[in-house]
Image 1: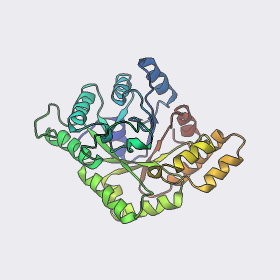
Image 2: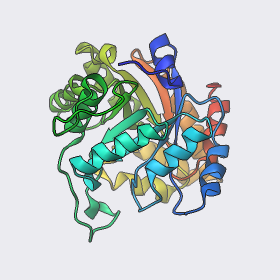
Image 3: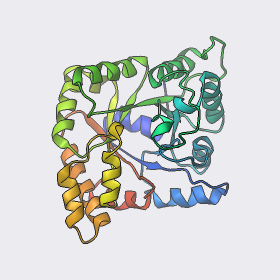
Image 4: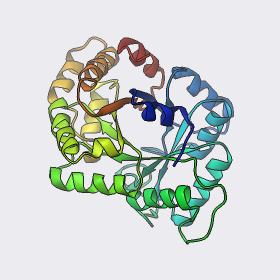
Amino acid sequence: MTNNSKLAQKLQSGKPAITAEILPPASADPKAVQDLAALLPGGLDAIVVADNPEHTRGSALACAALLAAAGRQPVLSLATRDRNRVALESDVLGARLLGVRSFLCLSGDHQSLGISPQAAAAYDVDSIQFAAALHRIAVDGVGFDGQKTVGNGEMLIGAVAHPYLRPLELNLIRLAKKVAAGAQFLLTQAVFDIAAFTEWMEAARARKLHEKAAIIVSVLPLTSVEHAKARQARPTYGPVGEEVIQRLQKAADPAAEGLAICVETIAKLRKIDGVRGIHILSGGCEAAAGKIVEKAGLA
């Protein structure tokens, strides 16, 4: 697969990639997307557009298309929780029609965890099957049902890695399946526990997964003790750590302390063999990304 996106070129060059997240606004005004995008540094290799991670928001596809039209480099997240294979393939083809060439394959947290407990989930396919289907579309021009699609190729496929899920062996088996299915890059959940992440990274290197897919590690600027504890309560997010919570509790300005913790974490992550880039999760605080890029020396 070929792809001329900035992110694909950076990963092919072997240089570290820098990406950040945007949460689509719950708005029908295109300017709301433009205003959020303006908060993000212009030198990013890609902007990852989240797909209703915790609350119902505006269309991730529409947001990614607006970014592409403005010359930014979007990665469109698509959760299989909310779409069957017909909707997934249709959205991917539609996004490509609108200039989006990079995709992040997600299963998505179960709707009962907060986004909409009353909603019925699709889960027709999981993220591994979705990545494999995108690979077939890109390479063979064949969709889910075996029918030919038009304009195959030019697609960058990503998946999510969970460094803290244990047992480690089962974690790596699932990760290897994502890579084998066609994932070319992996975005991790937010990292706070460096020791546990290092253990996971050593296991990934032992299986040479870092050579088959670029591992981009996520960081998140926590804004308060409540923010940290809310993440602790979500098992799929991984541990925040008592030390981090104590630092936020003692800080006169918890948001500034959260940003400092983020910068310190980046410095440690950049020294770990196999880390190919840094992804800044916004959690709805897109303005923090520019400060992190500057203070961490990522520009």
